[in-house]
Image 1: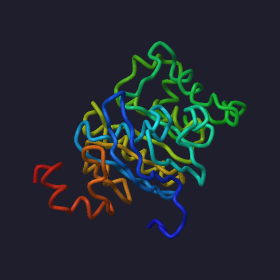
Image 2: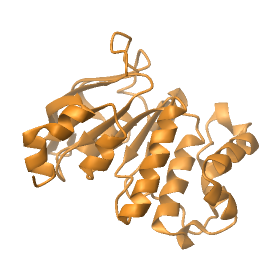
Image 3: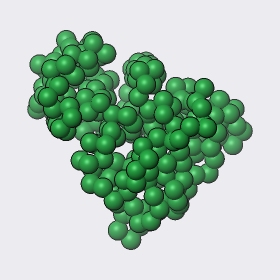
Image 4: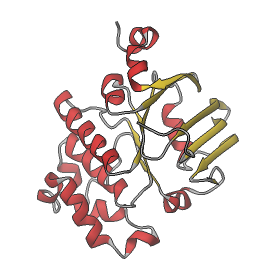
Length: 242
């Protein structure tokens, strides 16, 4: 259980954000506490990916606050946010296809506090993802979809984050492979890394989480424990077809 009496690791306060003239977020407020896995669910275009992009600095907010580890980070550039302890694993994995698995992982440790520990960090990831150790010299573009997703997650972990942002980790994966990825996400949480997941697969996303938020039209429509959201009639009707 999460102790919500403690300070949140991440807090978004009434965040608004736009792509040009198109407003995508209309006052998002949420909290993630240390050690939690929290899932954002919602339809395509609801604002879930945009929320992660604002946290990691890839999209500048128009108003509101993003507070991470007690510090306001909403105006910081992405590399500074990574240095503070936030890693973002984007939708679609976005690996360097013509580079090896190992070369892709090394790129995740480019920040100053991890650069000198690359050999040690590589071995940590190869221990956590044994399949990647077998494929360390293989070109990332030749891997299966599940293996590519594991490379993307391992690359995010190379920066030794306090908070890992995962955008649609099961996208395009067969159910059995998606299950393996979610098992790894659960294990990442058990290692003490806080995780915020955006996921279309509502059951799998919430099954590894303590809490969740339903995002609708750029706002938080509902929040609660993962168990309560899975049991909620509105959620079951809208996202599970039940």
